[in-house]
Amino acid sequence: MSKSEKEPLFSAKNIKLLSTPLNDENPITVQVLGICSALAVTVMLEPAVVLAVAVVAVMGSANVIISLLRKTIPPRIRIIVQLVVIASLVILVDQVLKAFFYDVSRQLSVFVGLIITNCIIMGRLEAFALGNKTWPSFLDGVGNAAGYGWILIVVAFFRELLGSGTLWGYPVIETLGFYNLGYENNGFMILPPMALITVGVIIWVQRARNRKLIESN
Amino acid sequence: MKQSSDTYIFLYASVMVVVVAALLSVVATVLRPYQELNIEIARKLDILRSVEKAELVARVPDRNAYVEEEYERYIVESYVINYRGERQDDVDAFTVNVRDELRKPLEQRNLPIFVSRDDEGSERYIFPVHGRGLWGPVYGYVALEEDYNTIFGVIFDHDSETPGLGAEINTRSFQNQFKGKKIFDETGEFVSVSVIKPGSAALNEHRVDGISGGTITSQGVEEMLQEVLGSYENYFRNQKNHDHE
Image (cartoon, rainbow over the protein chains, first blue to last red):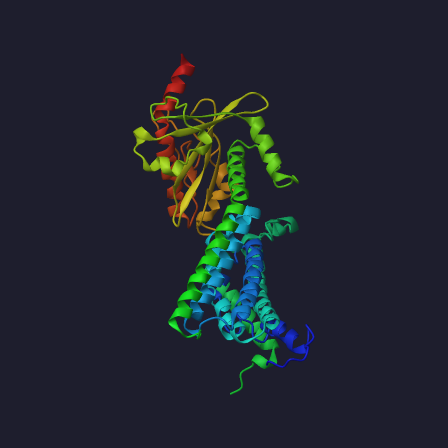
């Protein structure tokens, strides 16, 4: 791990840090972490995208900070230190949203604050950033957050389209004229259980296509 | 110093807390003016939307300037009254927090009124309202016509009502139902507007359809209107009597 020769910034190993969480080790569909927010903020596309971006920002920087501090953090209070770092970053994000993206921050309401409780972030700090250099830690953080984010966005896409008939607030179904053919929005898609089922369908599709995830028995 | 020693841990934690606290307070202080401006603009926009102004807000490039301009143009006056309908000249209507006022007994409440005048010269009176939904507060503005009886328009919003159910109170289709409803009945009794189960509103001028699945939020809206507009009842009566004389 601590070899001193120069490693290129985007070596195969580093790229892998970024890409495995998108698929093979996706935090939501494979590790089944962070499900709570996947249920809560995926009714509409816009808040889901904003939350995904916020999580990328928080997770990337939290991993960097913890990785920089890793040699100084007293082992006995490391969890508290991690929590303080995450909480401060989340408050920063919340304040910035309130100042510059007021409407979105009103829509997300408490869910920005709830990033603090997102188990993926602390999991990566504990499992990766505490034992690795800054750059790989950054990639690992961004990769995992993106793996979380894209699932969120896909779920939100289907829930908004089928539940409200809009995408990013734009009335797609109405424009296409499906209502005249007798189509109706599925109100059930708006409720939390359908987020769980949508995530389930994604897991199903992913397992069917990705050989590495097929359990042998 | 060893990393596992108590002194080190204590120092580490103290330094960390001080650094983080300093950082966050600096950020909060720097961003506060922006945040307060956002809140002010959002309130002005809600006031304007209750009388169907500022309709182009989604399409203008400079949103804040547009809202300020419309507000200057259409909101001609604002003042505060007490429950007897007397003007309180020492209070600024825009700074009154309706939620705090509602916690006070009726006799001590400051009740704000915003007056809008459109291009044809007809005036409307706008009242901020605040109440409780299922998960959190519901709030908004109610605009009355010059007769202090007919509702011209309403705007409602909420913090955390259930999406697709209670959250529907901030949609146009729910709010448009209130247009033309009356808050006094034929005998001059204050009845407010009730929000009840869908399908039974028919043509009754004191009722609108509630939201199916959003019963508690609908009731919250009903209670909010009853409570807040009720505080203004004396004022409405005074104004109506003036008009008749």
